[in-house]
Image 1: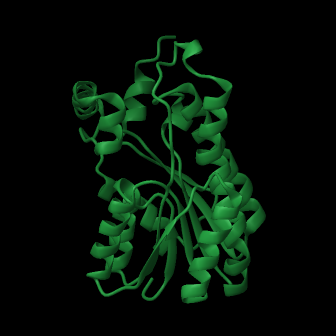
Image 2: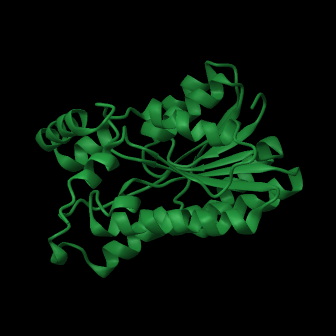
Length: 259
């Protein structure tokens, strides 16, 4: 990826920022995207440019197709090529799965617009440049929620499950030039989850994961980024695959199912 060009949506913090830093270490130029957290995006930019790569920072809401196209156009204006796209931007509404009245139609549509439609729109926008260049790698950041039906809300789990299915469809449609894969993280340490759960619930959930997962680990953003970079920087004959990255927590959950 020396001198490669990568767009990372939602790269102002967390997994997206970790991907940006790790790719910059490899010599890639990065289009850093944010929707609200400009301060975080500028910090990511500083960290990447300290590694002697070029960056741009672009505010864009991936739920808006025009803004997706604008992000891609600005990247092409800067570097003239796009080698990889990491669809990391996401949102949720924290709501217990049993509280059916806690989610509205509008909640579902908003979550889907960012988590599922957004990656589709970004993919559609980058594919012409990737096909012209002869190759490209797209990585969708889904969630173990989309595999196991768990997570912050039913709407979130459903949107991430749809993203997994979309990965399979696009992998078939976009070959041979473009590979499409996804990662499915479990619990990820960081501010996003801590703010959503609250400090006490976050600490309790982290402890449960560390105690119950086979690897006894609650993943960090940098660890998840390593899996994403596997699909970006290598895996030349891999497409349509979903990599679960949760320390084996899904195995522990499956083992508790009563039959």
